[in-house]
Length: 330
Image (cartoon, rainbow, N blue to C red; front, side):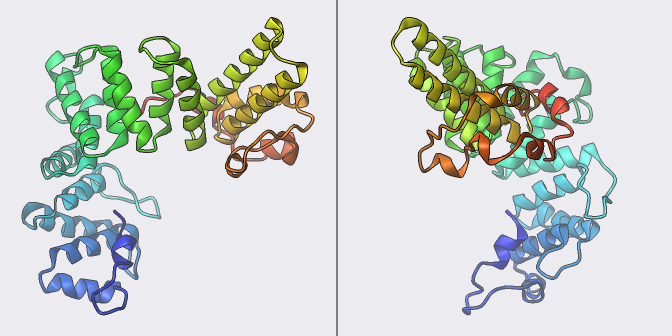
């Protein structure tokens, strides 16, 4: 929730709320208005000066006795390294952050469950840093990712799925992992779609492989670059096999290859170094065969519309580093 969301809610009198009147409502005892005031100070929005100390003070009162568990979550964020527009923030405090994320989770805030699980997983909860390989500790991590997932936090579903693949803290169960990945996919997280597709492709779950292609496609559309690359490779492999088997003409194969290049380009535009490499290596293969449908024209580009030099001018300085990072959001 952003403070701006509060500002655009009707004030009951046909107008819009602003910092002055919402602060007055807070003074009069409206805790929901106080939460909005705290958020405005966090963001520097709605006419309020960005002031993380003021935001922290407001959120602390609401968290401790104001019946606003969301305030506990934001208080945790403030103490977990949040900085203002000038790069300044309150001292990072793992105890404060983890305590308030846990309190938010206990109050039903899914983001609090997810952030607390992450802190557990990263060994940043004071007093539990040395428990990383302890099965009981891993079970606790899984518990909070599950709580996050159940409260609609898609990355919690993804991480819980990964734990079911690895058998870490929970039984190894690819079918359960697939269910959690699909749930994350349905919530709009590309990694969930891509990981679900991987399980089908690797025959770890029983499903038609055409479903894997559909999931890679959806993941790429959402913005999961590795799925774009996989989709491109599947298209290229299918085209080559069809020609080899004599079941497709050269024109059909060229169309499939053209689409593969579009997916490589999509990965490149998502700052994936491997996608850029595949795209630049194969750019000459596409002489202009636009096989996109109307929906695809809003997110899938064709090669001739942007020169290689134009792509290279885009902000891609860290693509190699990004490629080396794990796709798992844990």
